Image 1 (cartoon, rainbow, N blue to C red):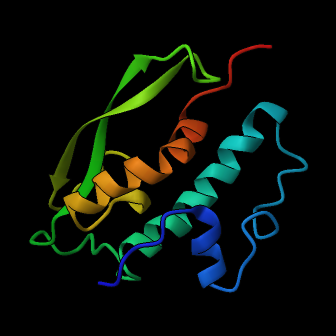
Image 2 (spheres, rainbow, N blue to C red):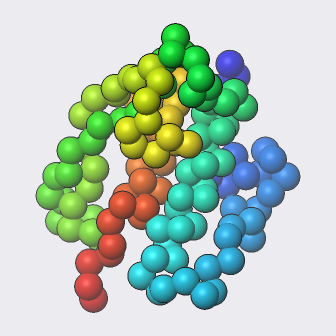
Length: 131
């Protein structure tokens, strides 16, 4: 596999897309959900890139499917007040436990995703602190 790209903008650019323009229309969505919906859409594209275009085959119990298991830790520097801390990469064979479309095909890619794209996962999972 060629070296994975490290930013959402690079990944979208490699596909001839613009990361700010090629997003779902969230105009009619609740305000507090808009960032999460956009982050999910971006994570789908990132996951496809990290899997090198290969699809997870849920009919193949011999294909390992990896996902991160994160801890939530306090972080006063984060706009959320906390952040996700990578705990372990877990694999499953043929069941979906967390976001089936977001599973990766290697534990190395799970670690890489956490290192470079944790902000998307946090935007999907958590609401920002009240201002």
